Image (cartoon, rainbow, N blue to C red; front, top):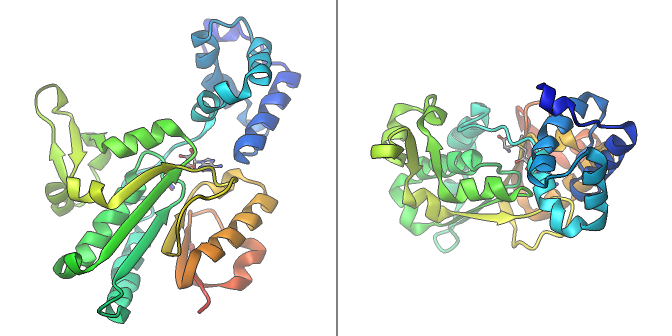
Length: 281
Ligand SMILES: C[S@@+](CC[C@H](N)C(=O)[O-])C[C@H]1O[C@@H](n2cnc3c(N)ncnc32)[C@H](O)[C@@H]1O
């Protein structure tokens, strides 16, 4: 931490207020181990707002919560993600789920809906889109395919919508996919790639707080909810699982992140792979 940053004092009282504020808005539980992170991420806003202290910032949040809450949430959320993160989930789709859906589809009902429910900057829904395209290549035109990508953070949604990434972010993407689905920039954009339009057309990016109402239309065949529920408490997690259950088709999949599990809600699903759960038929 720089000398300049140390100029701001973060008292226990202000830290408790900030923890409660983020919990009330996003369900994210912050404990004292996150104090440094909160400090780092919020000092930027304090400077931008030309405030003198964390106390002044907390006062501003109390006075104008509606106006300030998006900046606050965008600063505080952890958006770490990557293309084909947890590859085994995409392998399961390729080897089991998509062939099964294709086999079982009726000629008049070729409908597939997938929801990436904490999509961050878009790498997850684009990886899903590539996986679906590859599995359905011969019969894409017969299918009504849609991927919904949602997140609470408006900045990451903008990045996802644009679909422009540093080339380094696709280093580990198989070469055949790089060539087929990413276009290299030219001139001052030569270190960037843009995802192909056909993938973008499949995905709708939308702001959605998992804790609030979900103004979306299901049911979904697959829901990805990866690496977000770890930030929630057990009660919020169980409530979410019940809502995801309702949003899934019978036999649909709920896919969680590597360190996440369904806890007591496991009884409603069958565990069919590493952190892959199938709603009972
Ligand atoms: C670590 S990222 C995970 C991204 C992706 N699912 C993955 O596994 O690579 C967690 C995402 O959850 C989002 N998030 C946090 N709280 C949320 C909430 N209450 N509603 C919706 N999204 C939320 C954050 O903005 C962040 O983009």
